[in-house]
Length: 252
Image (cartoon, rainbow, N blue to C red):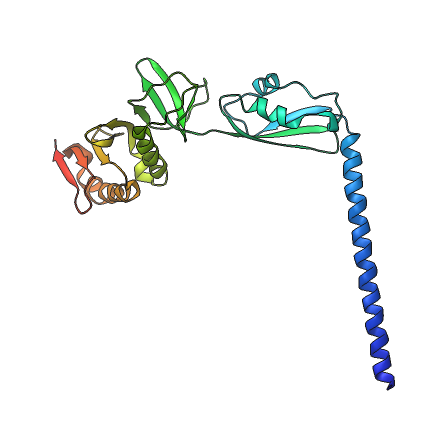
């Protein structure tokens, strides 16, 4: 065998051996890390509990909702039970939990976000997607439209009627459009006209009907920028956006 070929073969064997040794090293290191993680979890005592992501729910309410794990070892805690207890609080939608090397248990809270405020006589409540009713917390306001025509209580009942589903679709679409969200102050449901709204300025009635809300909101956005911004909103008493190829208006 020529000298050059023998040298190439030796070099190839050395490289193969190095790769195998490196792979073995990585495998052993991973095993050690897994073992260390298990050992760490079993022998770590919880020294503190912290929360993040919560706005409507104060920390005291979160602490009171769970049996304190402080002083317990990490492997003796029923994390599923803690999460379940936290999710019983009105605004808590989801919870994730992790622990750092200092024994601090950290709960990341995801809350329901209000899309409208229900006005029902002298009763009020926020409502989130899915018809979830939420109590209004002092000092924790959201700038959302007022919604009429649906019960604000009890909180245990979700809004799941076909009428609310239409309103919810409208609200979900309206959030995506500046003119659709910023210009509207009140929303209601009408059996004859579907979703109706009042503008912030002058309380002009907007009729959106049923379905195709994204397209109708685009029409409203265009009408607002091309007509109302030039002529003023005081000239109109109602604007009907239910029709595909035309906008029907009534003048004041």
